[in-house]
Amino acid sequence: MQALANFMLSETQILDIASRFQKAMTDGLAGKNSSLKMLPSFLTKPTGQEKGVYLAVDFGGTNVRVLTVELQGNGAYSTLQRRSFPLRDRGKGYDFTSPETAGSDLFQFIAEPMDTILVPNQSYSLGFTFSFPSRQAGVNQAVLIKWTKEIQTSGVEGRDVAELLQKALAVRNLTRVMPMAVINDTVGTLLTAAYGDRHADIGSICGTGHNTCYLEPSSPITGQPMIINMESGNFNELQATAYDLQLDRQSQLPGEQCLEKMVGGQYIGELTRIIIQDFINKKLLFASGRPEIFYTPYQIKAEHIAGILADKSPDLTGVSHWLKTICQIHCSPLEERTTLRNIASAVITRSIQLIAATYTGVLKHIDPGLEHRHTIAIDGSLYELMPGYADKLNNILKNIFKDKPGFVTTKLTKDGSGVGAAIAAAIVEE
Ligand code: BGC
Image 1: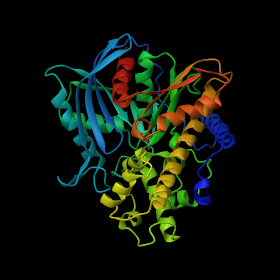
Image 2 (image 1 turned 135 degrees about the vertical axis):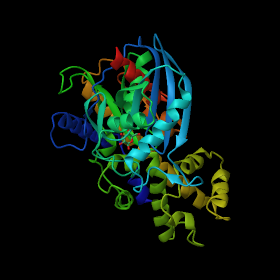
Image 3 (image 1 turned 60 degrees about the horizontal axis):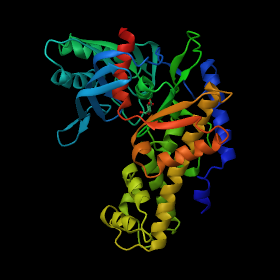
Image 4 (image 1 turned 45 degrees about the horizontal axis):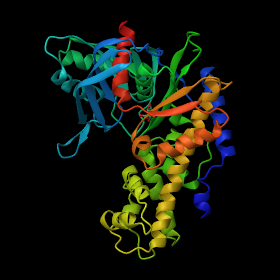
């Protein structure tokens, strides 16, 4: 299985990627050519004492959430109201993520449900989490560089999304809502963890998309600490397999978001499908035919991979059930089911190893002497739900920093992207 061996990285390879990543960080910060954009957020960490009720909008994929959050000070917070709604609904006949939709319509659709969670006659400061690569010239201005995660709405790239939201609020007559800050979801995740944990200095999303931010001790803009959104999903100094190249060629942005395409929930199912298809073509799997699902792009989802990896039964009955019900394969020998499991496991293990490598690069950048404790705040379905993901990630980091027990901890920071927008609004307001 040479094809799968290429997915397994040794510790030396992981460390090599970590140093390339660290170099890409310094190059990006210095404005040199780098696949890391190192975008300034104009925010630093909260004190944990920020207080008040804030409105947050969280837009990072095909679902948008609006929420009101009460920051209680002393690192405590609670979500008061929350609504989530899809940007595309085939049944209802709309899709605000397609190229046929104008950006202004998308933002009006986002602004619409806000009113339903607000207390009448009360004013709100708003934090807006917009989880796509955006260039900021200030905390409340963010120009979308390019859509990622296969979103394609027209007329948003190159525009200031804070202004688009502001206009949509005006159209809806929501004058009691005052936008204060636009942030990336990684920044929101870091702000949320740092609100109650002074060691938190890295924020990351391991979900549909992937990206990491961190607290840069000395920002090139201010010379002061500032959170930098690295857009690390775009890191490209990686050894791509033939399967990665095939996925990239057929994607929305060939040549871009290379790391994200190897690690993100949007892509790992598809990568697995491409490998399985190759195995079928080479007669290494399902000799009896060409099951449709493995020949249709994006039909295998991260949830399917999670199901396959969750199956710990000796004869892989869960995988057998999945093959029958989802793939219409009614008879497959154990050997085939094991091969399937090995493919899924290889894709996920590489995802974890690559992410661990990038975290190692960041840690060595911010703390070359490995002197302080660090919490990496992480949100996202892969880290939270993919069987073994968090444990393996922790083990790799523990091994790399084995001489420094307790040096780095990872921590699930659920809903950090939304709560973090409220914290950002509070920081700006103070
Ligand atoms: C986006 C990032 C975002 C990440 C996680 C990526 O596709 O470019 O801005 O942080 O997904 O949502």
